[in-house]
Length: 195
Image (cartoon, rainbow, N blue to C red; front, side, top):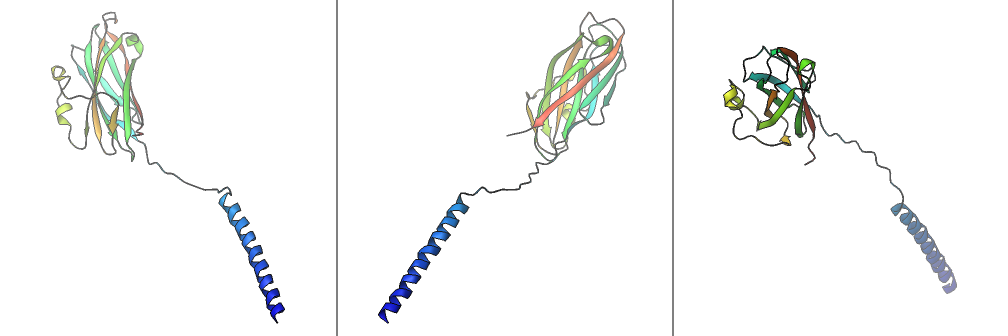
């Protein structure tokens, strides 16, 4: 009987060693296996746009018309009968209507028509950000009021639901043809804020 117990014990020992080896090899291979992962990342909506614009003339001038493009990224300001040396300001209300924080890097201003080559940007001023009212830098602005104190340098960080006001000081040089007509094009340069 003793020999029979020895054979059973030996068989159990061999079975345990065999199973342990198989499980160890399997576990080791699973540890070093390549895993595939499917991930979907949603960053939110990026939507920074110019909601309003105005032109303030510091020189006797023409009638100006300010229009915002449908996507809110560009402003067109039409001028007629502009005298040489005209000085003025372009005002923008820029809103973050998206769900992610944005960075306003700058605005660019260019000219078309007879104003081409005669436009000069003195400085771009930013005010804010504002969650609610910004009347102190937007409502009933006269040329002599500008620039307001407290402006900030770009880049401007703009959280969702906030607005910033920009005033752009511009002039046309003395070589501008008298009674010139053309369009000023203002474009917004923005990006995601990477914090």
